[in-house]
Length: 244
Image (cartoon, rainbow, N blue to C red):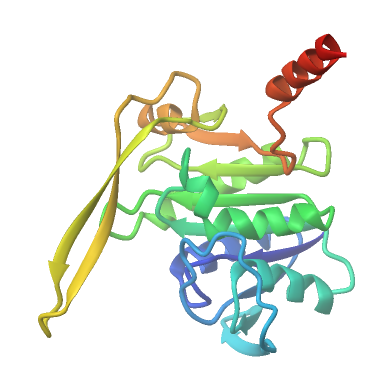
């Protein structure tokens, strides 16, 4: 099995190296990742300038850096490798739970693979201001891969680790309301700048990814590319029928 490994933290992230090392037990691995950090880049793609695909040393791993986004890396990685059977993204140094899925470059790389019809898994771990204990998480990454590779393909799965896992749990995405506020400040040169802060105004619901991680479980959240609101669409059809 050919496994393409990428991320949004950049080619030198320890989370990327850890994920790639675990993946070698499941197949032939190639790493293709951004040359600099691309966190919160979402599903941006580069269309107004050329991209570079350059080999970099990474121990015994075959690795390349790209001066683009996580989605660019998957596009170029699959172009240069004739057949890719699985795309893994991460391990992100920070969670991608609930609303964070919308702007996550880690999840976007997996989504790009799904758009190409390739099974994909995004991995994230909480950082809490410091690097997660990746050595402790590596055996759990292997357990997640063993479980998910038995699933019907193709699939798109978002995986989030707690600091100290005690098991795996299938979950749905946490959807919470947030209150946004703008915090003004000044830089060392005295110039005004602003930080946007989003704060939840409700607790995560039981059975969601955020709830599972809070309970110490690894959250496995199946995602889909079709974001159609089927319930609203159905009501619209009903109203249209009544109007006729």
